[in-house]
Length: 480
Length: 100
Image (cartoon, rainbow over all chains, first blue to last red; front, side):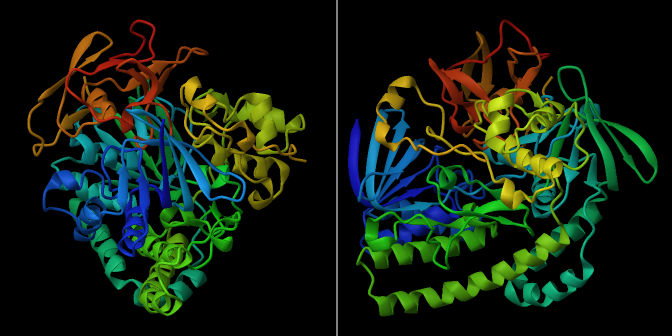
């Protein structure tokens, strides 16, 4: 088993993780940078290295520096399956790659685990051919996969920045979209929208301008748009063959071979919840996110590094996009270097002020966008027959019956119904389950909480589990 | 028939995977999951509970809908695994449960 000791461990080699690792390593820290994908870049810079010189220059720069900085050990295609604090020491990561098992002990840890698409359950969403818009974008970037137009081709359900971006990327790759459906959602708060516009305009005009351009490009391409869609349903035998829905014109059925769904992205909190960091419910963004300070320092600090110890940077700490993530990673890297004694206080202040200002602007734009496209409530109008947990095929009706029978928290529903007990360990159904419990019990999502995450973070062979220190296993009271 | 085609920017298939005993072409840069989707294999398993097809949903390591046995390693996320020439992939079907 490989065993190493470093100053800083970073999980996730997207914009935030790359930036944190490069910043700390260039100041002299030894860094281990982990990613489960075979190449660095995360989702947004997926496949960037293979594009040669094309694509995002900031991404090329960070990836090249991560590859060339002597102090960075880049561990790709590596699954971190456990992270824990052992005694008074820093965090210890257990991981697995093609060569076997490894363990990395660090003085500090940066979680840069990024975002996932906000799950949205509806009848038929488990059929093959129903995927996230982010999934189709990944398939385009990874293997150049473009939807065929035969059999109705691709229909997109959703709105927001990623949908517009994918439409543009798909058009550039020679593909087309048969229709875009916008689900009826909560109304926009126009007063709040107006009050947040100036901040967005001043804060990040370049991104706002790009978004407006993408919106205009969609209009130019003339993709049929259905607004105020309700009663969404995917239909087919063995795979999706059509989408049925209601709009202002009545009930419609469109044939399709791919149905891509999107309702924005939320922080992937699996690792931060495993470490029992404090999380808060954010109403605007309708998600849980770890509580952090300006530098990304999390609440759970252990005794490592004199009270620092864990940072969360990038979309995993709250959605700010790639540009915001790279800045957050830099701030975490600077703070980690300061805590490690690699950066004097005065130099830290000097380095941190410009990124802090830039990030405030990006956050102002994000607050505007969350008001422009308020997230849908995945539990609103969820029919009893609709599957919530894809892995274990648990329906909303089964969950409602369990709640009525006294399972009033996510972990109790899990025990009663197996919802969240499958291979994905509740990553997909968890956010829906929290909202469903909120509906059924009349309590706010903040109070309901999220499914408890237990090791391992990803399924691993039994031999790997045996390597875990049993003392790590958290012992906690059941929820009330 | 696959719901996908390859973009014109992708050079022709150079790799071959052995999936459930059949050859499936792949391109440099493919994950095992994108190679299977490009070949029209959109169902990765049949549910042991209902017999319904189980499918990949996220293609970014979250949903675990693409679990396969890859080169003898069961429970491997196909979307996180780079396709390599000669790879052996076993989906979680009995014999031929999906409608490909």
